[in-house]
View 1 (cartoon, rainbow, N blue to C red):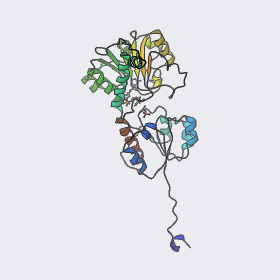
View 2: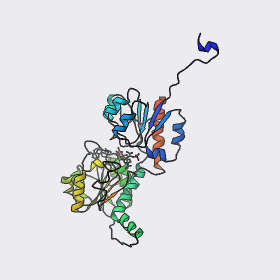
View 3: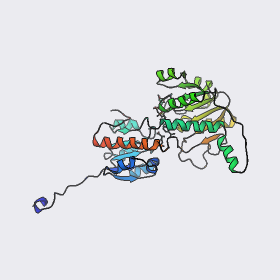
View 4: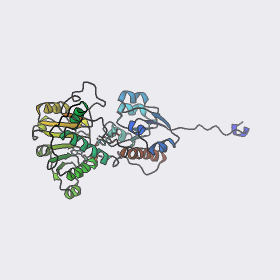
Length: 334
Ligand SMILES: NC(=O)C1=CN([C@@H]2O[C@H](COP(=O)(O)OP(=O)(O)OC[C@H]3O[C@@H](n4cnc5c(N)ncnc54)[C@H](O)[C@@H]3O)[C@@H](O)[C@H]2O)C=CC1
Ligand SMILES: O=C(O)C(=O)COP(=O)(O)O
């Protein structure tokens, strides 16, 4: 006899979608994204990312979707995660920790969140730059320590800034640089003609030409084979003495031993960076205590305005994709 005939409802196996959520700013910042994600009936497993490959390997295979940040998603992780894994929703822009090529080959969508954190990151770029030129951290610390260290700094007005990567963030940096009275130079493999014309940005075809022309170099290109170690000794050698470098993109755009040698020699006057090759860094990381380095812990996009926008976009991407709806921003096409 069928169970239903005995007055019981038919036994249906309910399939619960399992989602791995790793991004800490998403979890720690209030916003409507929490309610949206929680209302979907998914089973959500929370971790404090970014997770290394070893931890991802431990977890992979149990989830239908990743809602992730800069966690290491390698071929080995994908091998373990599939066939169950159906989608990766990256909270953020930089996809360098995900093997996107491999995802594409597997027709696994990688969703991301362009256009929601560019103003916040541009503001942080100027936090780093202004803090560098006015010795902000040292002088403020001196006051706390009972000293009154009136250190002489520099203006950025009338100085030349070179922007590597005139994409979303780079363009916002350019606009702010103009407002500060800086002369803007730039370089991009896809030159934004209309923006550059309207904002009088001087175009450089090569990093060598750009680095030689400017007082400040600000890095905003995505990390790829073509941008890895873009800033290295032979190019630093072309710079004006005391060049300042600001990096809110990815650490690997800079060759670290060459940067440290240039800071020691004074060829580079200061390095303000929001990103490191190891995050969090080991206690003996060569840059940590360098007097000419100013490091923030990858907070470029972490504001109460930007995080909910980014989190909402990442959640909408995930939810809409799983429902088969169109409002989804996909990084890889197949
Ligand atoms: N510190 C932080 O919290 C954050 C860091 N980021 C980083 O900033 C990067 C840029 O973000 P968006 O401006 O939104 O990306 P985007 O894609 O709008 O801009 C990147 C630009 O770099 C250019 N580019 C690529 N290769 C180049 C090369 N070899 N030489 C010169 N230009 C090159 C591209 O053509 C593009 O215009 C992200 O990839 C990410 O790594 C993004 C958000 C937050
Ligand atoms: O958007 C990106 O690529 C970022 O680097 C932002 O990092 P976060 O989302 O703050 O961990």
